[in-house]
Length: 318
Image 1 (spheres, one colour):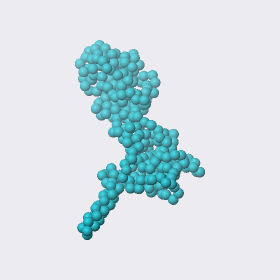
Image 2 (cartoon, rainbow, N blue to C red):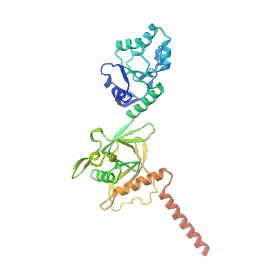
Image 3 (cartoon, rainbow, N blue to C red):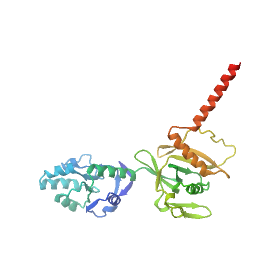
């Protein structure tokens, strides 16, 4: 599946510690835009219908065994058919030595040949998982992302409402900052939303009247985290007199991000309200709901039972 995003081949080489047997011109900057990987067994026999040259090609023991039964000239033809395609790289797994015909055709068509010590299945599953993450759909939202009691909480609201100040108070209370001002959100393979900060502003936070501070240096490594799943969204808005705010919590509201519905709350802001404590309670309550306990529902049930008992007692007296 093609993606709007890409990852450079050099990044994958470093991440998976791939040995470069031959590097094509500019191979490290070669963009990978598809999350699928191909084992070119059929292509080595000459079958190229539906072949996608944009995929990484992985040769394992099965392909190597097939090639070992061919003559040198037959292998040369097989590798020429494969490497004449504009593939990003050919990866040989299990530490297998490449055939001379492979390297000959790689030189002829200027292709990249890599080698891994991992088994073929492990190598492919790891690369596919990494590509799905790198190429996942994503957006950037103006807000603050913090981790509170293990819950990723995305704070949204208009500029100046107090998102960053609330995040600092949460950090002082032992929680962790993921992103301030800009939150990069991507949808992972399990349909969960993962948020992180742009590299340029990671671990920094802006406080009006003070300026930009480095949270990691000021509060220590335990005060920051590179990424976190988004478990709930809290919209901060200035308190509006006359507005009816939810006081029981029976209504389940959601915010849709990248076609994923995330539980959301609206918290009114006014002087005297301790937003950090409110967000802590909201995070713990969200965990309770995910574990099957809803305090609002239980409270309503008790109220209804109380009125039912009172009504029954009144009818009994009559």
